[in-house]
Length: 524
Ligand SMILES: [Zn+2]
Image 1 (cartoon, rainbow, N blue to C red):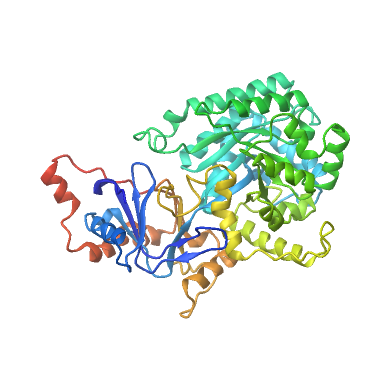
Image 2 (spheres, rainbow, N blue to C red):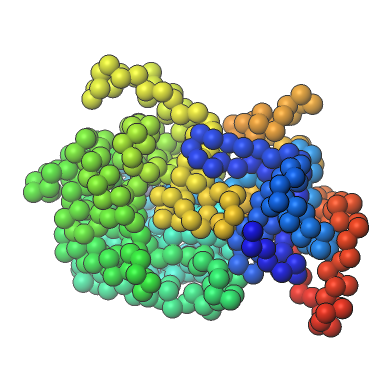
């Protein structure tokens, strides 16, 4: 076990929930311990102090070297869990979230979406909406989010700044559209659209060191918070020359040898699929249109994928692409169901997405609930492709994994985030099932942590998410004054005194060895 120096360690003592593989869920005792390297933001060790193995002994000895301010004590009725990964959200559509859900996809785009997105030409307007959108996603526990911007490069760069300032992890892309779009919301040519996307990517990469002071650059150890993505809105709104240029841009990559993610829509709605088939008779299926442009590869992920036949599914599997299941918007503007278990059985990774604002809620808790409902519906409906097949519904544990590690895997960030595992970034939620404000549900004495977690997933809200951590930093959380006074680091530090009372404090040790004052991590 490779532990950081004590002065660069943060500790979280209490119950934690881990989801090592899909459907598997482990819960530590109240003596769980997570040690985080404050320089890299990564989890250095995760043990249960109730056990006595060698790793636990080393972690316990390390804990004893920390001062109270470095230790967060997780109280009864609280637990740590991995942060949510939202695989598909439209940041500009946050402006009208919760409204305009009465139309099918193509009409909805024309009536609600394009008029709103066209306003993002104004960077000041963009700043206002994006600041609120990012804050909302983060407060709801989304530690990593895959955002669409608009066709406006400068406004989308403003979205990147807002994400970085808030301290969220994200994929962000400028949207490309050069056909079948309204006159005030279309790019003038494939060349201009491709050049603007390329400039967006290079600006985001070039501004990393300056705009991510808490990210890259700290000893070169932290993964970047923001990854630029390539976003053809969907095949109907991009000409083949534009899609080809975007395919090349994604394959040129970020300079580290890795391709850039491609984030787009696929087979959401029956009219859309028919339209694409009419426009592209040369393609064997909708996904083949993307493939022919070089846009289908292992860093590509598609929102929706409700109507994919076997040919299309095989194509995604062969190219290592992923699916983002957006249950709420599939019910509404998409008008279709996605059989998630079939995708998983066929070896295609699946994330969950809120699809704000085709989905009304920016909360991944809602995405989990809608996914469970969808899965139950799918299990009860006849399957046209396999009439004798009875599909097993997804369990809530499987669905939670899709909302965390599954999402990270689809975004190509599976080694970086998604789970409470050594080496991953500490992107986590501190959940309180009995918050001081009362919250949205009740737990009873006989409810164990598993039951409390399930209640939180199905009936909880952001009042229960008292801290949101990204890369080891507290970046959001329920803001009740009571928590500031009693609920977080201050009280945790006091309680942790008991754990480390026999230890010589690190402050004293540092004074012995090095007279410089210690830099303590800043609580936000
Ligand atoms: Zn979408």
